[in-house]
Length: 407
Image (tube, rainbow, N blue to C red; front, side, top):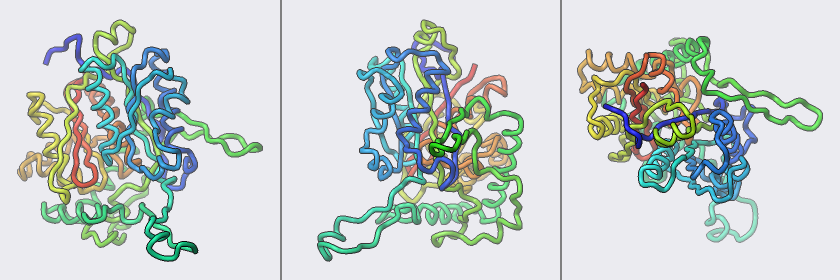
């Protein structure tokens, strides 16, 4: 697939380290995490404020956005020093939000509404507030104490079900056992820790300083907080399943997390004008959706859709990232991609999440799509270039897939 001047290319990428629930970053608003990421992207690319045309921010925990009066993208770009005329959008497509932000940036460039765009994904799940439904005020006593609701409990969607239950049940239907999911979780931690020790995450993560009060020095946060080397199948097997899921446990699912990730995109022609190196060509960002219960399998048809629209096949793909919302997702999706053929499935799994995934390092839901996208770029670079795909599922069985080429 030959390159041309109008290709959309990534010219900069950065992310915070991903923090665990209630960790070092628990009080940092998502707008500030996004602001820091924009500042880092500007620093890494050497761009000036007037050269950025728009900023698209994806996030999922909209109650947390509400504590900041919403318009997170607009707040972040202004505080990062971009010009007031910069156009922005904050969007929610569940865990697909950050890749959908990239998709929006790409579309704006392709239709001529922007020459250079920043896409960000962010969430601080630790700041998700408890809330009081309006009916507690008007359907009961007009005044008095009421019970609050925690939207982080079960992470379900009223009328549709609990995500862990849906994923676990679909996994069973695909012949993916609890033991297989526990094994994949251990693989995630082991591969991540090996990759980290080799410095494979160093180019992604930038350090942030977290204030600790007037009389205390700031804490420097620059390492993903969740990966562990001391996981074992024996310990995993003793964990109870959650929320009535047949297979999903706290061990084969990622924790609630905090973090931000971002990329800068432009055309190949504009990159040359600005003296910026194209790090990857974004061939396509495709979106897909299926029956709401099928969240564990939706990455597979989304990848297939992306391959079809780019004229590629699975044989052309050197590396795959499938976000580990639960271990069920990569296991079910790779089985679907391999059409149940054990040889094909194992071949696909061997190139999937080669440096571990969200089970090890965390899943700040609005940011994970761009995290796997930038890491896919790094893997392809290590492999000498080629095609890759990063896919992520979102609530009610939405899917996004980013098809990349690294020269």
